[in-house]
Image (cartoon, rainbow, N blue to C red; front, side, top):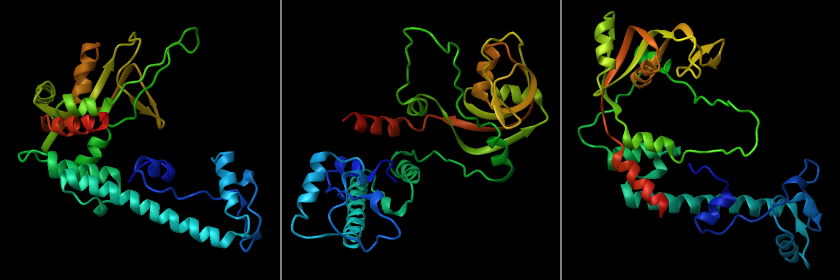
Length: 276
């Protein structure tokens, strides 16, 4: 639900830490150990001062592994409970969504969107069967290329919030999908319609001299960006950009949606919340 360590979350949510524990000390044959506090080397990510403060608690009493394990596990559960309670309360105050009903952050994010930010006239299809399998073919991981593997005064750049930017400023597919095949000219018209979003099966013709090919393709389970001819499934956005680079297409089949701006308020709200 919250992708960070429990220690870091405790600091962020301002709740009591779960404490420290000598993880590396625990073995199958010493679970009943009682005596001096284990050496500093058995603890992870603590300072000398933290270790000395911890040892001071056992100046006059022996350190008991089983007892300390129980205390640590109990604290672990309490800290997690307190963090989630604060998180769910804050979320409910904004969207009136009970976060404890969801098992992942993405599920909760979708619930928040549907409850508080999704316009009443927007419908999002639950894709299954043939349409789902067809569209799935058009998804690839991001392409990263290195054109200058070595040099001097090299600068690295990152893009801030690229996914939210695309969600905020570009139309998204909505409504029920329509499946169309056989009419290449009609599919081409749909692909070029800015009010529609399509996933299209095409024969691809990429110029051999294109220095940085755009479209990805899988060969022997490896993702490459080839030139030449092949068949694949791509989005209308990718196809229209590829045409500008000299690609040519023969359209075979498509699944198309109406498209609208649906994430404007959602992204604006959370981006401003993040800045604060």
